[in-house]
Amino acid sequence: MARAPSPAREARALPNQFGDFKSPLLEKIRRRPDLFFMKFTYYGHACFAVQAGGKTLLFDPFISPNPLAKKIDVKNIAADFILVSHGHGDHVADVVEIANRTGATVIAPFEVGTWFEGKGVKNVQSMNHGGAAKMEFGRVKLTSAIHSSSMPDGSYGGNPCGLPP
Image 1 (tube, rainbow, N blue to C red):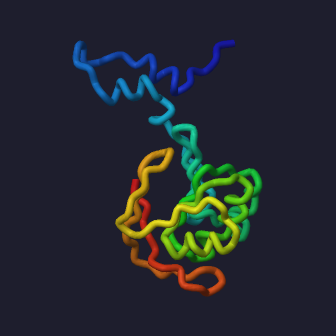
Image 2 (spheres, helix red, strand yellow):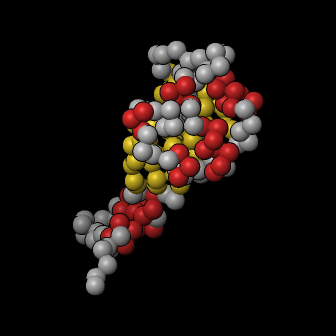
């Protein structure tokens, strides 16, 4: 039985469609196809995961209290990085459990990241708006977002942020 071709194998076999012209992008794809193919998983509300480059990025994990995600077992969700846009419960509900179980690095606005550190999360990258950080998977930059941001316990959650690609 023939195996289905993998995206990585297909990328390495890409022809140079421009004759002698060398495309830097095609060369990068040939060398590291894992960086150019991704899997997107939607968990509900604002929560989703992106698998790319051998890493799993989880955004705004709100799964266990979400009635629309009741069939999803939060214990089976993998994460290398958890990106949090603001402090509302419907964006942070499962961060502590997933981060502690997986050892994922939580990337969040400063006040939200500090709150997670107070909850025992070991790997936190707190950031300010406009700031950027180079991570294993690429660059993260926080942009401004218009919304409120209090934490589930009512404490101040700082400014919400956008996480552009």
